[in-house]
Length: 440
Ligand SMILES: [Zn+2]
Ligand SMILES: [Zn+2]
Figure 1 (cartoon, protein in one colour):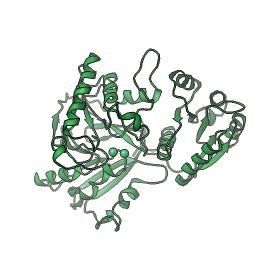
Figure 2: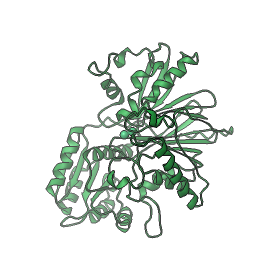
Figure 3: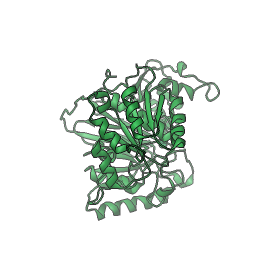
Figure 4: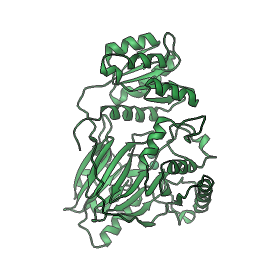
């Protein structure tokens, strides 16, 4: 597999004399499989350069697969400027996480409405097929692609590409689930962080969000990004060979990226790891040698199932402000919200309504969140035994976290939370539990 970086910046394009070496364009990575299959990861402003390089190479007839992590601007602003999309005869498969309600095609068409752009989506010359994805796997040419939700204030997927024994994982825009994801004797890793490490397992190259430094992170909690030092911890825990620090903060000039790379290398060295670390730089190319092992294995459905009417979410909290905040956050996405303000009522309402998702306060009168979860997991009705249960908590103590997971809690929502984050996580919890539809 050949990998080339066309845009490595996060949040905002940052051209100028201080970003010349690592580049100012936003997320876009080209991956070329051994048979020539073209995969483009994200379509930030870097896609403009990639499109022109493809045309200049005398290949106006170029088709490929565009995989979008999420539709924040820095990941799609190059889309209307990606030249191959304008050429009749080209065919592009475009993939992105499909939310329950709003589809990829509408979102991309939105940024090409007349107020924003002179050409509409419908006027693009190439044949374009849209694929709304959930978690699962599919193939593009010889490449097996596995998707997994990342933790970000928009529904976001990471992409794991496997071909001929080579693994490349693209994990842009992800925040650790626990405030300190490293596993220690006194603090086991959060189950969701463990899942993230498994997603990166044994990769030859991990391209990972490294927007912040550890020193900056306390001011940026909840913004949806990883401190570079923890990207190192993830990559080491996953047994990865190389780590590309990616999604550089617009404030981080070239010299600051150099310093961050040095900090990360020292951290890996201190851990006795041979992990190779570099700052992803625009135009940088890597060749990853494939063996001919055919490791393709398709094991899970991909298309989110959207057929059901409005889904019901039960919110149980004795704090009316939290109940109101969550209701206001969820109703605009078309969910029906039912509420309770103590544990016993929560259990009764769960039995009566059989909701698709339950958000439970940890501390409630009657029965607390853990007791309600244990009771649900003992029910005869599989809809209650298996419903995703998310505990709302102000605590982040590792002991408590472990207690919750043992009781059958699916995940945690830690206060204070941001509405955008809740909306994205709710989509991920629901889509993950509902995977089971047809393959894309
Ligand atoms: Zn981003
Ligand atoms: Zn983002």
